[in-house]
Structure formats: structure tokens, C-alpha cells
Picture 1 (cartoon, rainbow, N blue to C red):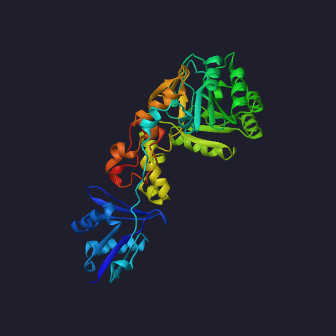
Picture 2: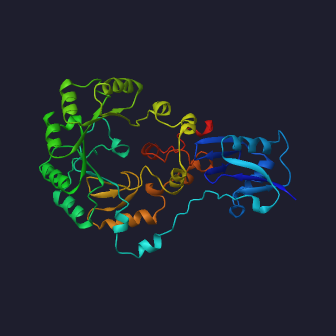
Length: 401
């Protein structure tokens, strides 16, 4: 006796929560969402069983206009599935449900004294060389973006040298150095770092430039320079700074926290091709909801491959591979979040802290937050620095999804 075969394609993900079911085709980036019904649930449960090879065998074709028929038709329309009739079992090739397989290497890593494999995961290191004694604004900006800390402290050259030399930090990682106040060993440290790393990015506030000529000096020292320029108190930018930034091919981070700041930043960015508009949170939730947080419309437009979704299910790609060293020599995944170790210790201490703590930012996925019940959690961008700082993880306004 023949039967109907409903087969979902192997690059299609199907997720459900209490109210709805969502199918996402990672080949063409199309999706379909509908309300759950008893007959759709029965079909979904069979698909969810890995032993069924992403196939449901139906004795009869679903009734026209039934919820199951409408669901199947819409999955076919987005090329996520197919429905066909067979006479014998040999007449079709089954599918494979997309499931991420992440090998658990924690025990092996704990017993392995060689940290070379762990070091290979590091892709970006940020070192704060000096702080700023008084910050009229930006007191906690460093917990959101790359920005100096408020502290009359500088890191010692020997501390930086020993940390880099003793831990064999890969020379091809992205190295960020954050400069606050000027200090005696500044040039010595910068010279050492540029000689040991192929990509060194120096971040300095506009207020902390001794003179515009410092931009030329840092560039000549083989640093990619980024000027941190807050628009809260400065509504425009000088011709002298524009000239220096353009001639040195430097960057300007235009820091905004209001709609007025944003308008001014857009005007300035038309004059500097390397200008980046960077928002900061400072009791301006309405501004963030309007201009920063993700919306459902933006989520639906995202184009994620199967690999992208697997990555979202396994780790936080925004934070993964990043370490930050504050001016006191403490190593963090992000300052203010999870303390991992100290520069006076072997870097393996920090790496093991990450592997042994699944809640560090490297592995903080939306499944571990309030977003766990949302069908869009694996399509959504990874948890950002802003969400972690503000403490609002469903920044997409989940009630609208």
C-alpha cells in the first residue's frame, strides 16, 4: 500500500515555543511562522525525532484547508520541504535534521598543560595602558565600548612585556591598546607592541591628545589610530582634526547617546570616510529602542547559513576569542562582566576559567537568557556588549515577535 511522504530539507530548521512554530530555510533565508495546532504538533514531534530522518509518513494526504495542509503547503513554497506519494519504501531518499555537534573537550583541556590550542582561540586582545583621572562623561563607557577607564593609574612596561613574552600570544591577533592620560613609558610600550604584533590599534580620546600632531606620531609608530570623539559637548569637528585623520587614514568613533548627537554624527561622517557612529547607553533607553535594538523586521531580513545558526547555538560570536586587560592587570572577557585571571599568571588560568564556566561571555547564548522561549533566538544576533551592560537580553522587544 502506498503512502504520502512529507520530507523536510536538511538545511531547514524548525523551532517551536508555547504558541507558534517557525521554519527557517538556511539555503534561501526564507521563513514561515504559524500558530501551533494539535495536528501540526503531531507532525512536528515526528520530525523532531532524529530516528525518523526528518520524514513523516502519512497514510492519507492532509485534508484541504486543514492547519497541517496549510503548514505543509507554506513550507513547500519556501522550498523547505516536499510532499510526494510512493508505492514502496525504496522510492525516496530520507533527509537529515540539522543538529549541531559540539565535542566536549573540557576534560581533555583540563588535563593538558599545553595551552597552544587554547591560545589559538584568541583573536582579539585589548590592553588598557592608562586611565583618565576625571571623566566628565563616559564613566562606564569602557564597559560598553573600547574606552579609557576612570582611574589615575598606568600599566607598567615590564608587566606588559612579561605577559606577552611568557605566554606566546599569537602575533597575528587584533591588538587594541587604550590610552588615557600621557605617561612616561607610553612610547616604550607602544614600540614593544608594534614590534610584536602585526595589527595594533590605538584608541585615544580627543581630549587626551596632547596635540593634533600626536595622530601623525602614533601613525608613524605603526599604529592604526582611532579617535574617540564624544558629541555630547562638541557638536562639530575642527578642520585641523579632519585633515590629520584623513592624511593618516585614521578612524574616528563618533560617540552618541541622543538623537541630536546622531544627527550631528551623520553630518560629520559625510566629511570623514573612516568615521564610525558608536552609541553608548546612559539612561537613554528610548534612544536605544529606536536606533540600536533589533526589531522583528530586521530579524526576518537576516541571511544566516546553517553554519551561522550552528555557531549561534554553540557560542557567542560577538565575544568569542576576545580578552581584555584593565589598567590593574585583571583579565576579563569584557570589563565589568567576568574576571578570568591576572597578567601576573599564566594565560592558561584565564582560558581554563572560560572553559570551566559556561556563563562567560564566550559561550553566553540566547538559550541561557530570557530569550530561551523565543523561536527567533538562533536567527537573532548574538548577545551584544550593550545588552550585557544594560541587562536587557530581549532587546528585540520580544512582545512584538
